[in-house]
Image (cartoon, rainbow, N blue to C red; front, side, top):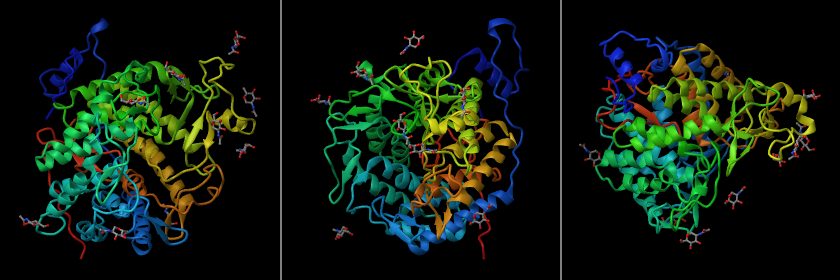
Length: 545
Ligand SMILES: *[C@@H]1O[C@H](CO)[C@@H](O)[C@H](O)[C@H]1NC(C)=O
Ligand SMILES: *[C@@H]1O[C@H](CO)[C@@H](O)[C@H](O)[C@H]1NC(C)=O
Ligand SMILES: *[C@@H]1O[C@H](CO)[C@@H](O)[C@H](O)[C@H]1NC(C)=O
Ligand SMILES: *[C@@H]1O[C@H](CO)[C@@H](O)[C@H](O)[C@H]1NC(C)=O
Ligand SMILES: *[C@@H]1O[C@H](CO)[C@@H](O)[C@H](O)[C@H]1NC(C)=O
Ligand SMILES: *[C@@H]1O[C@H](CO)[C@@H](O)[C@H](O)[C@H]1NC(C)=O
Ligand SMILES: *[C@@H]1O[C@H](CO)[C@@H](O)[C@H](O)[C@H]1NC(C)=O
Ligand SMILES: *[C@@H]1O[C@H](CO)[C@@H](O)[C@H](O)[C@H]1NC(C)=O
Ligand SMILES: *[C@@H]1O[C@H](CO)[C@@H](O)[C@H](O)[C@H]1NC(C)=O
């Protein structure tokens, strides 16, 4: 079935005709010539050996966590202790569930399913982040529910009654709802529980406001109670219509902080990195989720994407072949980027495929190739948390275009960036973008790069009972361990590392518009809204004896 893409260009109509077999591919002369469709792969090549090695790393991480940290949030693998960094509700268990389901790791699935009904989401002694709780816990629960009642129904227990999972998601959201009880409806991101209450924050950022709408809308669609989605959409409205003008320095590209009292932007500083990133990500993912209800979100993504190509593209003086995206302070560019921002290539590819716009796919591939260089150029083969470069097209004496520090000149001359923060905290974004690049092209080069990245991380970050964040990607041994295994290591790094080598499945990203799932920013596959998804084919797995 062809997605009801609302792009009534001649190009789109031709594509629809071709897909429906109604016409041959026309090549028109002159200005009417349609852009070619992005080259889409005829097939993918699964690599069970590599997928199995990623699953082995997942099992090592899980066993360490289960033995030394469960039911706390995160494992400290060097000391075999735990941390309750996400309110003590078992963050790693909830974050690991959708990955265990995708991997068919039945023992781990069973251990987590036993645990979920017992989580007490009413009590916690630490501050609750609406954003982190939404993307990890709520996203993890909804995804598990969607997988278990969809393509995996019947695979885990005959009852198929997963009501308890959805009930936990609803209960959690009912506790979080108070966040939206502000004068403007822009949520307060910081809560306290027992009873749930806001903490009186004065402002909130566009990522934390704008990365709720997928999970909260999904919850509404699953429960039939529209309240949840409406709350998130109301907060988001201030981001779709930013005021005053300082909040939108380039069309579609926004500042970061919004006044909770009245929904007004407080600044014009932003980028595709942390604090802003997943606001842009969700604009196009909402359209993939439901292309009828979220047309305006798509239009805002297109505006942001076009401004990005027009204003933010930057090539390093030492490596003009690379393409990075600058950040901005009002309309002044800052030539800095981050590991977090490297989801941008994958997001452009997803947008280009979804909208039949090959130019976004091509641009996304350039971003992917360039972020991959931040891995391939370091001693460990892992990319740094923050990097900078000198822009080729800005005067070298401009105050916003400084040269590298003296002790990184040699590195910059060959690499095209210098390292501004040397850490690596088990982040997924580079491998995530390689995943989309592979799905879009079928080019096994991207599988090779993702495998290299996984092997480098597996080699450098393995320690004690699991894997740890490291201090320096450009020191041979990683510069030491921080003794912390992030829950998103389970949800994201291991999932994308696995899926790029795994066989076809209902949750793999499809280039033919037959998607059944869309990944939340924590890599939890969320089922696309009813009526817009592909017909589900059930997967029956032989359960291990
Ligand atoms: C909430 O959790 C804290 C810390 O575990 C505990 O001391 C307290 O008794 C709990 N309160 C309730 C009402 O369960
Ligand atoms: C499903 O399980 C819940 C408890 O988890 C129970 O209350 C409910 O009655 C069950 N529904 C069915 C149809 O078995
Ligand atoms: C936020 O909005 C309120 C209500 O309009 C206003 O009183 C306050 O000064 C604003 N805060 C800032 C930092 O602009
Ligand atoms: C951005 O613009 C605002 C309003 O014009 C101004 O107050 C602020 O100082 C500017 N910030 C930067 C970093 O240039
Ligand atoms: C940079 O150099 C150019 C040419 O030498 C000069 O005209 C300009 O004023 C300089 N700009 C700054 C910010 O120093
Ligand atoms: C470069 O010098 C700074 C300041 O002395 C130091 O902090 C940093 O570790 C050095 N970096 C490298 C790569 O040697
Ligand atoms: C780096 O490249 C610049 C520009 O080509 C050159 O001036 C400089 O000598 C090089 N530095 C090193 C350490 O290679
Ligand atoms: C990161 O870059 C900023 C801006 O150039 C600089 O002030 C800071 O010292 C850098 N930090 C490190 C650790 O290199
Ligand atoms: C990954 O690391 C584990 C633990 O050190 C090791 O046993 C395994 O062989 C590694 N896998 C690969 C593919 O290098």
